[in-house]
Length: 396
Ligand SMILES: Cc1cc2nc3c(=O)[nH]c(=O)nc-3n(C[C@H](O)[C@H](O)[C@H](O)COP(=O)(O)OP(=O)(O)OC[C@H]3O[C@@H](n4cnc5c(N)ncnc54)[C@H](O)[C@@H]3O)c2cc1C
Image (tube, rainbow, N blue to C red):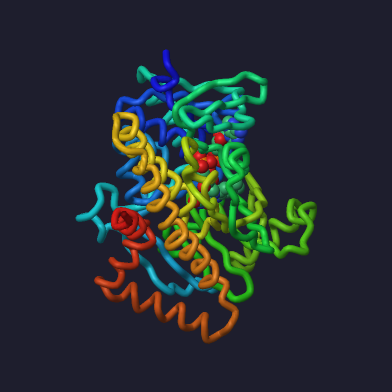
């Protein structure tokens, strides 16, 4: 087989790599996914899927099983630490625009397992484990991919969906521009049922507070709470039961003794690759951009990249101009910078606002928006990422 007809190689069997594979296969393009690990990872990580992402994943048959294994969350709330409601929004007002007008709360490892199961049955799909991509070299008419075990593969096109530390991005010398926040984020999960003690609590609730913002987010059987952790606190301290107890005690005064099932501390970055396309090498998902998790836009944006890229690459393979791949870069990199980075930074600043006037203005703006159906719809159009998808379509 000539290299021109060899499968497209996707580095990384994360949600983005598998979504890219699904889109390519949908258009009849063969795909080989190379995954560094010995199986699909089981980390909790992201757990929020927005309405347009659910519509996209529905094309591959993934959304129904995600709903079956997850929670449908039509509401999002913003509260103050003393449980005063600032605003509540109902995604169902978008039902004329999307098939799934809500968020689905489901751990990302469930999506990768669902997608791998659906794709595994398809001819033209291969998934290889213990296959860590070490580097890639664009030879002009093909890409040479070198694995950590020394073996070499050739492909007409390589998609780097190999996460934030992307070996594909690094081997192409593509800068990952941006910054890292000084504070880290701590996620604690507990089976404690906050819904039993906080009246009308939505499954996704953000708490604005000048001292310490946090959010509560429900996945099946667990609540996840996220808190910022100051730079000077050592990781050793953060991982103690006492530290977790103290953070959780701030959620509901006077309540303690939470069972903590998972705790994860991670660095938070706002970075975007200088380009999402260099010759025959393409980047998508965390390999191309990373952001703070406030708003749940990282993984969703990555799936939007995968679908946009998969459809365009299939057209190029079918004979159209490869300028379509520059359009992928302009559209997806464009909205990543204009929308996702801007919005997630703004979300963090709104929740943590220390200046009393800025905090008051945020609360007022949000409660006025929620009270006005037209403004609420516009707001939900933005936070569900329909706005960034519309904008991407406008970019030529
Ligand atoms: C602790 C944590 C919590 C998070 N929480 C949220 C959240 O609440 N909301 C949100 O939107 N986002 C969150 N994120 C970000 C979200 O998880 C990512 O945006 C998402 O995983 C991106 O998917 P991806 O497929 O691009 O990359 P990944 O999920 O990182 O997948 C990359 C895959 O590539 C494989 N791989 C890596 N290197 C190689 C290589 N050299 N060769 C072959 N395979 C390779 C990896 O093993 C992995 O399977 C979180 C991230 C972390 C770390």
